[in-house]
Image (cartoon, rainbow, N blue to C red; front, side, top):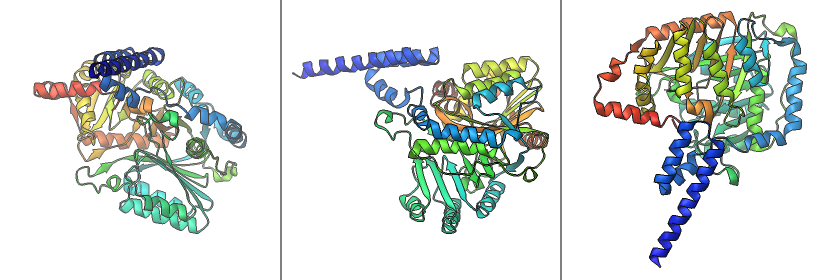
Length: 477
């Protein structure tokens, strides 16, 4: 009986493994990933079935269906944005044809006459953010991957409770995984005050219970549909340099005012609809021309997610790399690119582009730090320069392409941001902001040390093996 039972369990296990292999063959996005899953499912089915259930999904299911079921109202809002702000919409610069393609991917045009301010570090960001919240008259939208119950988290908590008591409606969306440690009393106090608070829970439905590998990594605040903040900063004391191991904390946020706020607000509404099945009543109307600053550039909001078909993030960032002409500077705390991104960076360097990658000296995730070292030899051979930031922990996500535009948002240069996370970026062609970003990154590079292949070659073999093994985990990092 015991032998028969074992035989039945083995048969069922391999039958399930074959079904998973069938799914891999029908849905794979890379040959390497498909082969890895198939080998693992055949060789180690008992363990691999569990891992495949947790990490094998290639597409976030349910979000697109939810958006489509709310089609009429969300399409009406999208049309209202276009109609109310048509005078502010504009074509991307003629010298940047890739931006026209990216605009099509974003399903939203560029907008002019925005005010864009670069906020460098947590002090500047939270100061400006709390000032804007204090001036809110109708509503405050907040969305964060991480919200902590610490000093800055409690300061935000009190500010939101105060605004709710003043009659300003608060909508608070947080990622269920990233903010898993947020205590119930923090949330319940806001709900009891009348604030609308919900987690973005990727496993809210029965058939999506194995989607825990996906994250909503967006970080944004919108005030009355007039002012918005977005970038790399979450709500936690470490972003103010209060973590002794990761201090000082180096980050970048963008403050926006003008018509670009509305596409950012629409991104929030789509996520809110997924979490609540409700579309909040917000301000979508245009403002008087005199209220908009006159600017020479334009802004495009680019939301990307694991629900996108085709892969919006991959296509958009590859287009940026492939069209860089003189300068391609990328600041990313997590540098674990796949082969196609490394090849694109390699080709850019061969074209004579000044390709520089800025990573932190000490990452907050060790596996990511090890994986980054494994790219050094290839990078140096290609002419790609990798710098390690030494003045604290560098967490900003900034791209600077020539003197044509810069990108500020939540995307890291890794598989998780490109394919698994919900992310948001702002592409800005405003000359003044580009110059500010250029000076900012120049200062960052001056506080960094260039890594060479010797930094990898001169390490013990055990370290090399650890780095190469970490790189194998790239799809999950």
